[in-house]
Amino acid sequence: MARDEINAFLGTGTTYQGRLDFQGSVRIDGTFKGEVASQGTLVIGKDANVDGTVNVGQLIISGRLQGEIVAKDKVILHKTANVVGSLSTPVLVIEEGAVLEGQITMGGKGAKKASAPLPGAASATASGDSENSNKPTQPAPKTGLFR
Image (cartoon, rainbow, N blue to C red; front, side, top):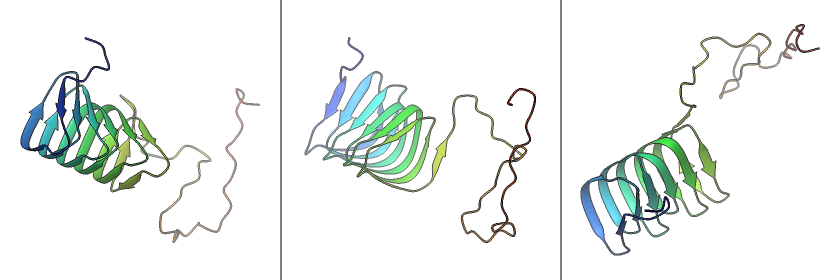
C-alpha cells in the first residue's frame, strides 16, 4: 500500500457519530462527531464538519473542526480550514486564510520547557502592563565562542 493511499473515506452527506480507530490514512468529507484515535493521517476535507477529540499522527484540515486536537507529528491548516479548540503538535503549518481560535501548544519531541529565561533574554507579557515594559533590554553578554 502506498504511503498516501486513503484506507477509508466518509463522503459528503455522510453522518457518523462514535469512535474512529484506524491505521494508515482516513479522509472525512461528511459530518463526524466523537473521538478519533490513530498514529496515521486524518484528512478533513473542505466540506467536512468534525466535532470531538482527535488524537492522530498527522492532521490535514481543509474543513471545520471543533474540539481537542493532539497530533504527534504535524498539523496542516489549508486556507479553507476553520479550527476552534485546543491544539497540541510539534509542527504547525497554516496557510493564509485559515482560521484558528483556541489554545495552541507546540514543542518538539523531548523538548524541555525553560524554567528560567536565558541571560540577556527579554521577557514579554500579553497585557503589556509589566513594570519593565518601557525599559530597554540589555544585550546578551559575549562569550569566547561568539565573538
